[in-house]
Image (cartoon, rainbow, N blue to C red; front, side):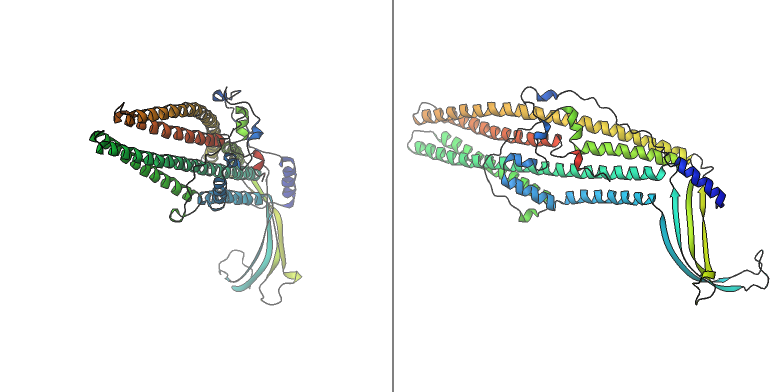
Length: 476
């Protein structure tokens, strides 16, 4: 409804007094139990400042140029990362749309029409024509007074949501980078296993030739030849199985970096990767290092602002409107001063009855805020768990690998002794086969543990948030 100029003055005075009103509750981030130190960190990981972890290019800690090149291709061509970027762009555009509500809108309009009046129109002027033309052109401005903070809260919510999506983008980037590093480590571990199996096949071929020569000379039984042949065939089978696993890992890397698996390949290499020393800091700094925690916190802020938006619906909305233009019944030479029209004044809209709709909307917004808080706590607790898991795996795999490498040395010594005794006729070939089986299994297990330890270090870096910092989050 339109109000007169006196009422407009009252509305403007009220706007001046109430412009600072905000109905959103004070922002509260849920408290999460936080230990003073990581349980699994002591005593084997020395205390180091958190800033020691590389910012951004953390994968360079592994000292592998091929991995560095693949990570660059991931950033440039990953379809998953491009999708995450598009989701952020959408949220940023929504934030920009909401921010436009803080400013007046201005529209230019024009129309031409032919009108016909009813003969029975109430209060129709005498001798007026039934039919006439109408030509109108003008501009109209509208501005909603944000007396209750509804628009400001909408802007706050949209901005916080955009920041959450930006943090989601960083989470996706970190996840994909960690997945690529993990797949690459698996690939290089398989390269080492394939090289070992190829050496084993060569050694077993020599052993088979030895047993065949002894059998031909009547020194060894045919059973020895059969056992040697079995060992050789088994090792060849293991080599082929490992080649299949390597092919699958290579295909996974191709998909991650946006390349066709049919046209992508990585040359085999057995050079070991560097095991980085990862500074873990203390649990209290983890919430500042993980983008997924930042995203969860920003979604609390968005939900909190949405409560204010819902509460504002209980109060009237006031809009200031103004129009200026020309109107005439003549098509020619009608943009003149006598044809000018204008209007200015506020309008007020207040809902008197909605059958509980607004109350339900406030309850919905409050429930969404409670959900955001619970999800935040879950994300933080999961983050602590992931760090503890990775620390435990890194530590215990290191000990297990050390013990397994010692077992490899002992098994190799046992194999050498059994071969020597077999050549001298002091033992049967069954002892040789047993030593061969134990040695190969120990060597494969040692390589596997080395790979697992490297993979655990990647997951530790990922759990710590990689090189991300809150400073990377946009403020608008």
